[in-house]
View (tube, rainbow, N blue to C red):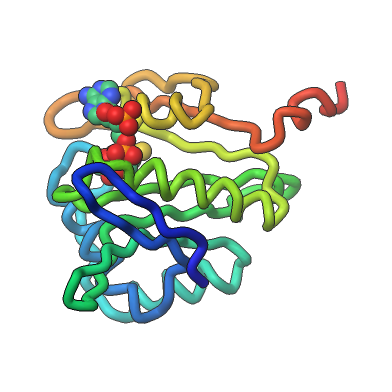
Length: 191
Ligand SMILES: CC(C)(COP(=O)(O)OP(=O)(O)OC[C@H]1O[C@@H](n2cnc3c(N)ncnc32)[C@H](O)[C@@H]1OP(=O)(O)O)[C@@H](O)C(=O)NCCC(=O)NCCS
């Protein structure tokens, strides 16, 4: 389902919609490009296997979690996924269904034009529709663009795990961030 059409900087327009099975090669192409950059994710290996790509998609859908994609429309009618955002529920614990864990990636050629902002806006709405009241994420301290965007979108730093990852020949701090989708939620916790 198309959730929004967004006008971006540099004259681009993208459609934000639910990911479909036909998007998985594009989605994993973006992922693999970011893996190759080697500075943003604690992942070293690309995902190439078709079965792995498909099982990721079906597991996400069957667990009630979701992935939205940003689709760039060409004048010739072409359509290309240039970014994606996932909101997932931890399967490690019970009692955490109200929390969505966020992951976001934008194709290197289309950064800084508002794709990330657009994906986040739509993901917050979709997460609320699915009963999430809080979104959490983790980001390297060496990623000022992502941290600036998250703060602009209302995330605050919940903590820092010092030297949590070894990346590109150096230790990196993991910055943990969170955002309440409905600020009232922060006042109704049991004490
Ligand atoms: C982080 C990411 C998802 C953001 O998406 P994006 O489409 O580039 O973001 P947007 O264009 O919507 O917004 C980026 C903002 O950061 C700002 N920015 C860019 N570089 C910056 C820097 N070095 N320091 C501070 N702000 C910066 C931009 O000016 C823009 O803000 P503005 O709209 O107020 O001008 C994307 O850049 C990306 O995929 N990066 C690589 C993978 C990654 O880091 N994923 C997140 C891992 S936690």
